[in-house]
Image 1: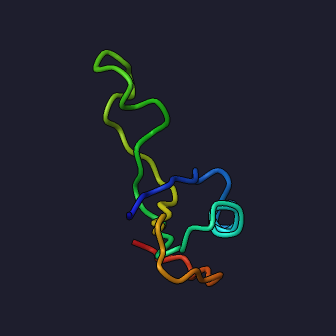
Image 2 (image 1 turned 90 degrees about the vertical axis):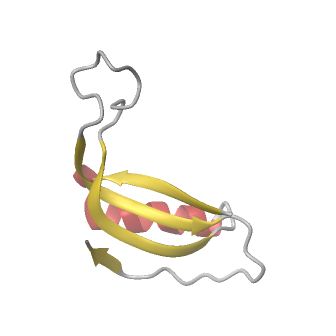
Length: 81
């Protein structure tokens, strides 16, 4: 099953790599890609009346396979989208 996790721009590329490492080692997920792209702002989907509803900001999207048939410890390089 493919899922996406987010890391904020504030933590930078190293923060995204740390989160990917955690997801790989602790959760046993295969990391498929790490993209530096526009991601939803924190809390932006909570209510249509919020000031940041449906707004995006720069961040990192980590795509993982949560049910890998073969586990790999490979962490890919960050893709600038």
